[in-house]
Length: 156
Image 1 (tube, rainbow, N blue to C red):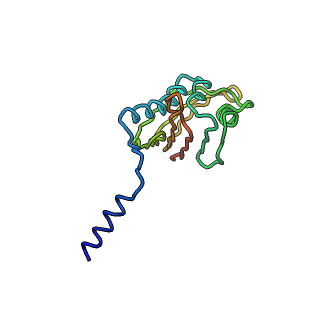
Image 2 (tube, helix red, strand yellow):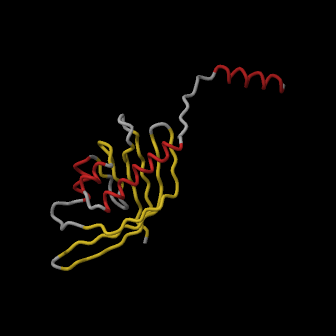
Image 3 (tube, one colour):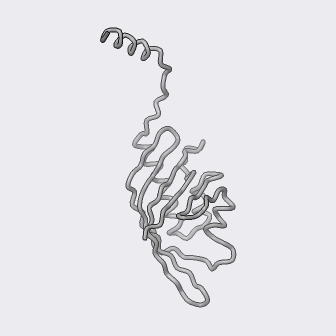
């Protein structure tokens, strides 16, 4: 009986289709991390176009407690609504907790503290928000890793 089971396993293994190697190299890991870090750096530079450049076309945000936001125009309107005063980001500390990936997809998970300020009715308001975040990044045809989906959960 053992020989029959072993024979069947070897037979099935020989008939299995070849599986593409989808290992995630150290250079892939570093490049995906750089893509995620570019998002933080663009916010710290207070560059809306720089922030938008970190997203893949048609990307999706999943903000804490809100409906998903998909596409460049919707993401821009979410972050910079036309009827609100401009914000200034003064701090964005992001600690990466995990990076995984396979092929052309990567997942970066971490915790962050975002500090920003804006003037409302003549009063400067400064806020800090802690969150847990997940960036799903895709490698584009140009080899650059961009955010396909970013989600976060506010921590109280």
